[in-house]
Image 1: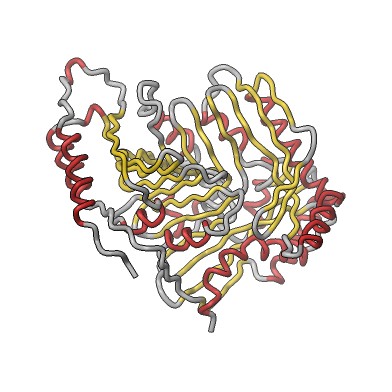
Image 2: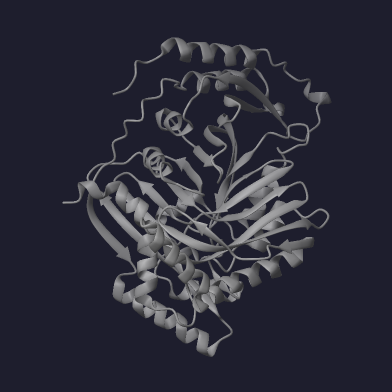
Length: 467
């Protein structure tokens, strides 16, 4: 049941922001710095659930972000500006354009978005479903609902050099369409009608064998192979409702969702941080090696011990550590590696994790950080460039944004997760993406089962309707 619509609340919020908007002075353009900056209006709200609020809003684009410790959630609706490119160097181009609005005088203004796993992936092999996401898509949100320990706050972002009567009227119109009568958490999700795997099991076995053969005749030591599991449902699914249900059991994970237009949304529950930057300080991590979780505490401990002592998994993990170390040497004055490998427990699986922190060289940009750290051996392979080149030839699918960077940045800091454990949601179709690291000694059946464990939270969402 939905609670009664609170027209008074919505009207009051719209009135307050409209008043603040029309109080903005129109600048004298002859004397204004041409560098684009942002005017940011703020309004304190009663507690709102960002995902339920986002699900209730009309229009696009939309973006959602929850940090890994769950302390902050952000829901964005509408765009004051977007930065899109589908060219091979799209990420660098989009970041350069976005940087024009990220100024020190407005340090809390964030740009959100993400990037294709492989911007150089051949155009003639691309899946049309990823077309509107491009190689890079970033947004400066028009409206931004932020919920953290200090409560809920609604922000409205306006480019300062666009503050004029027409723009203010347009923003007032957008504001009038927002809803604050969010429903109760009585979420309906449709049931499963059909499941299709790409590659299929026999094709997967051949791919794993092909990868292992490459290890024998090339310098390649690891290749991360991806799978897509397509679910056809008995009704269209709201991607924000699906992410709401995934959030209920998401432990130690980033949550994200991006909807560039009406064609679909990319959502995910990722355990892996690509990097976090605060000024010149940077944190990153190696996450590799996997075992399932068990409800029985003793069995769960046995699986963790098996993972920690497995020669195959430690070899795979150390390749990721080596790749990240090599990347940090290019962008850091100094860096430190955690003294030991730590267990990293999630809801369905557990991993090995090694943490890094460092100090960036002078004037290293986020574009340079992203280009250096992505793709890591955790999602591509090792050596990285050689692995990605091999994936273009032997994988059966276009990854699109799967395993690409997704997150946010502002003038002083940035945080990007790796877009794994993710899905593309379009009407009554959900395409789930996940992968497994293949090294010498990998067994195709075990790697298939590992992916089944990784995607199990998605499968459980829709399994109740299976015919």
